[in-house]
Image (cartoon, rainbow, N blue to C red; front, side, top):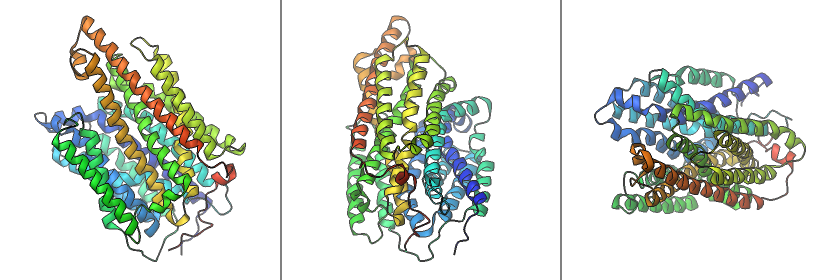
Amino acid sequence: MVVPMTETQRKIGFLVCLVTIVLALLDLQIVSAATVPIVRDLDPAHGIDKIPWLVSAYALASAAMLPLYGKLCDVLGARRVFLGAVAAFLLGSALCGAARSMDQLIAARALQGLGGGGLMSITMVVIAQLKGPGESGGPAKGANTGGLVAGGAMAIGPWIGGLLADHADWRWIFYVNLPIGLAVLVTAALALRLPEHPVRRPLDYLGAGLAAAFSSTLLLVTDWGGKRYAWTSPALLGLALTAAVTLALFLWRQVRAPEPVLPLSLFRVRELRLGFAVQAILGGAMMCAIYYVLVYLQVARGIASSSAGLYLVPMALGLAASGMLTGPLTARGWSARTFTVCGTATTALAFVLLATTTGPGTSLWLVRGELLLAGAGFGQLVGQLLLLVQSSAPPHQLGVATTAVRFFQTLGNALGTAVFGSVLARLYADQGPGGDISALARLTGPARAEGVHAFVDATQAVFWGGAALMALAALLALRLPRSGGAADSAAPPRESEPVPV
């Protein structure tokens, strides 16, 4: 029997969760800023060819573990899985910092990703279970604040990465995780007292393996397509076929497995079905806003990478403002549906403004204002979509429902990056000089001016694509049920209804 947590332990546990979210998302963002010094130190001759694996190893391992982590939470309890994920992340971080070759670093990065895949998703399960008896809105406040912190960390991550890369040894990008992570691990072990399940149920390891194979091959397709291999090359077509086959096998297994890692019955609940879809769209749109605004600032405006990251601070401020308004608006009767509709519409408007005003000489303050608006839209979504899913999921499937949110966001990130990247490259190749965007840096005089105009036109098309995505998300949000007010959406059943085993 688990001893109930005191109010102080709950507050400490909540703080631990917020620190863990920051740790997870910053690690995703800051490594890309240090690739050049890493290659220069470990393998100056051939390391540049291995950079894609350095970035992909973490993402592949992280995505592959998400479905299994959710099921482990429902079977073993979130506390044990949380501690295991943090420990794996710290071990991977230590090995990354100590790596003496690119191959060692890539292997350690994959181990780090195995743990990192659980930092964000399992943390949200823990937050949902931190509600005290008779407390109204604990999980809601946790989900909203967690989403706020996640969005802020995602926005400022590139800037911190550039700062560390410019002023510290690249190994500290990994070593900095150790004291923070150890504090999280020890504090969580002492303070967290969450429901545990003494009766063990079988795990669907075959289903988890198929999910890992599908997500990994899909991420490779989106990462390599149009870059390392042509979209019509045998290698890409083979990977795409493998992704399709493993997806079909995974769905077949989920229908027949006694304890599926992602029960298809979840998709019969309208809130869950629509919530997963909007989350996937949000993943693609958020990558579009962050990544392609940074590319525009660096390529078209000549701003250094570390300085370009500062332009995402307004987005973080928009996220913060939305987070602060969530509580008062919820008290006035706003439901998760209202936030989702308003957030998708706000974000769509921000993309329309980016698409219509972005040019070679656009005021950078205007860009900052548009990013502020985009952040205000994202801030209404990142926490509320999770809350919507958690409050609608069956209590004994809280883990798989919560990690499914992160899983679909990861797939949306990958697909959005690939599609928008292909659109940008294709449009520039059709209109710009030099053949591809990489040639733009070598152009001078009138040729460069022509290239910048072609690049800006292509970037505007990408932002129009983001606007279309968020318009689709708004239409899906309008289909959410109107029933369930703010009180319902703010208080998902957790400890008042023990998880059946």
